[in-house]
Image (cartoon, rainbow, N blue to C red; front, side, top):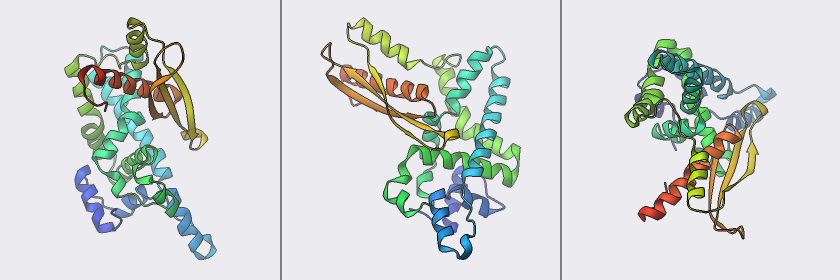
Length: 256
């Protein structure tokens, strides 16, 4: 765990931006759980800042920069293609990989309850912190600097992957791919179940289980769990994990 202000320089190095106002970066990694604890300790309940407003701002900046880049880079794409690609690039399923690569969990400032419950590895907290950091960069240095960071960290590596595979124009529909694969093998279709719903109304996180059945008796062979900002996104990621499981059985490896 890294909490000292001086240690945030490692995060600045990873981002490629040195903050003029380190207070903004400190706020970006401060979860509401710690802010509320600090308020309880202060005389008169003086407000302590958390990263929720910065997250709100960062989410909007991320969407703008991503949309602009897709519009510029793929003029031949339809609105539907651009929307699907943008949805993937700003999705929790994609952003969690960037948050983990930046090791944001080490820098989070959490309340005791969140610390004990493993908050440093929770996908929702990590993605929220990533968006908050982007919002902080925007306030600290402006649109051009945060655009550069978003393109380098979030957009370009993933687009390069899609282009190299020749799939930039379509984001894989894992549910349909799984359905077709199971049908071809004469196997029953998977079941999808909502097992958890958390977060405020405007920023809900849905946890879905995709259950791979062995036969008509309904026995479950494998269960994949995934989170998403919508039920549809979570179902897609859970279906992807089931496909990886099926692939691992063929190759003899372990699913990712």
